[in-house]
Image (cartoon, rainbow, N blue to C red; front, side, top):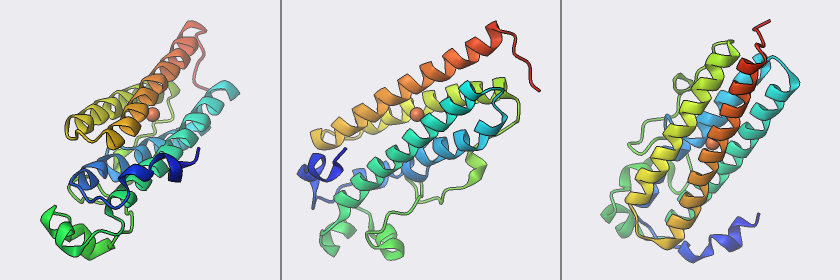
Length: 184
Ligand SMILES: [Fe+2]
């Protein structure tokens, strides 16, 4: 996908959405958190089907990190210091300029304490289903905070993907339970 073309309309606009969007970059229910959780858990899935699903979704989540990071960057790039200060983004600018750093909406840095990996594939898959529901809810919160159609469109797309991921994890969990597949 060519993000540069798709997201060009909101280049050079600074907005509070910029700080809000960080919650899906470095926040507890964000894309980086989901990607690392699934990549960590993939090893203890009981078969190739499970390992493949977690690897696939983790890879897609990393692509979503890129989408969110691109949005954050494009909302900040090229704006004046006055606008940055006016929109309450001075603290972020002081530390990172227009660099994209994984923090949450309040500026708290990313930590692996956000992710879980138990080695029990049913527990992990149910944790992943919950992670997807939390991500969907967070996207809905973000969509309530903006009326910019150029921000809303990618958020709606990302929200939809979380619903699909939830369904894929649930299918796998249900398959393992129905086949009575045990932890090795
Ligand atoms: Fe997801």
